[in-house]
Length: 514
Image 1 (cartoon, rainbow, N blue to C red):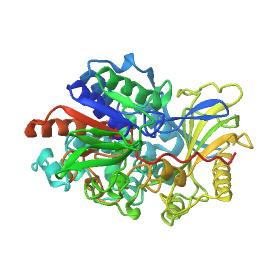
Image 2 (cartoon, rainbow, N blue to C red):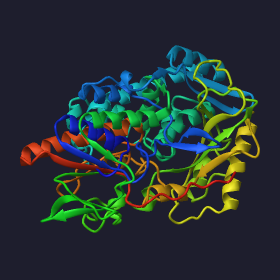
Image 3 (cartoon, rainbow, N blue to C red):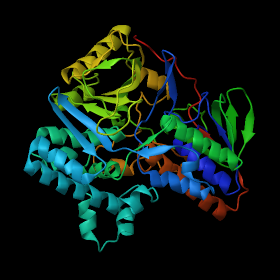
Image 4 (tube, rainbow, N blue to C red):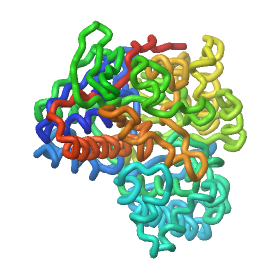
């Protein structure tokens, strides 16, 4: 296995539980891929995904290995899904209780908005229920027709309910006249690195995923990754960090193993790449797998991000665990990103790591740990973020927060990751954090699946089918393990399997403007 991201770890655990000989090679010092920890001012800050949904997927992984998730991580359900603000006087919380959310929307924008929210929630639920089994948990298909057959051609209503040909922003207008609510629910497109103006209305299902439950894990998503790595090791898998893979080896037209950067060669019948498929297509793992997956045009990359890891004092705004501070001009924000520039007046997400997710969480004394995210173009391979540009981005982020009533300590003790830094950590991506953007009806079917054109080489992770995000990467890991099991059974191969994740080049040093 190349890489110890979420999808790779899930595949490793499941394959090892079925008796396969599995070794995971990770180039970094940690497991979890993007789900890492960053040290700032002596504090350990969650460095990757912060929202944990679809808990049942992980319950299934642990159960398949004869274990219980609750015995490995401590998680509690959030009462407040997220707190949203447009300025110092406009605030709206969404709650785990849908009735409370509907009441909050009505109090915020009126009775029509509350009815619109109820209809939107019902539509998002139906889209999710139509797609969960045939698509999210189903096999990769290059066209919608196999999925439509699994749904059932006689269920025309279900197929139309997916709304693949409608744009998300326009569909939201059918439910919400208030532009603030279109902005709030349109933001869910960014969960898979896409623009709500170009993404299909199908992505409204993400709202239902969150409405089913958001959990807070002690230690963050990195703690979950460590738990799955431990689970894999309990099944007999080996996880080797500081072990970058330099090349995928081939013999007689099929995969035969990997060569590490140290020169060590490991023979294997199966190799799984738990990294962005772009790394294979651009030769980051040698010439052998270059034609195994199609190249992705930079124009089709998902969003990247500017991410600040800070340990600072905050004032003026009652933060919940998850908080969103909106731009006054959402269309301009995505237009600027599309033109290759960081937004000048951005929407800002703040994860207040030390705070709970109840109506009135108490603020920690002194400094607190926060992760701050602003969407950005995936141009980290062509744009060098100078100290001056980093400072401009930092000041633009802080201006949005001040407009909404939140003041951060200045100067801000922090580290900043730009698209250039993400490209250093995940080469060949330009800093894209979600693989291919979900723009247009066909994009979801064009994502890389578990099988490649090179026999014995498979892919998993957030850049592969079904989609980006922590639970989707885990579903990708489940799918890869299932497909490999089928292929091994049909080919009657031995049970040896080397699974790999990550990239073969070392990370760039994390930048700082503080």
